[in-house]
Length: 67
Image (cartoon, rainbow, N blue to C red):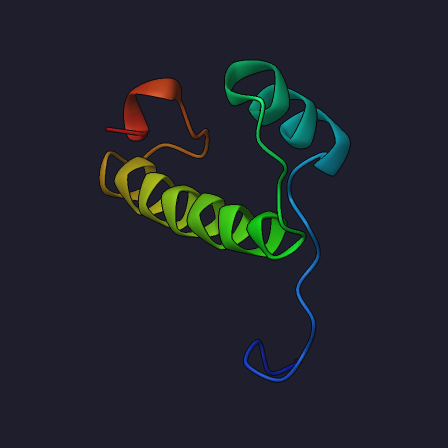
């Protein structure tokens, strides 16, 4: 098992899509560090949703778990 603190984590977003969204919405550029920050937030949201599904005895994470 690898140590999450020392291993580079995989991006969970499509960088080009996120950068395009931000540019079209605001006209701003996007730092490459944003991709890692967004991926970390997504991991946290997913971990919370997984726990919610487990508490309900399900093996499927559903949209309602992301509240």
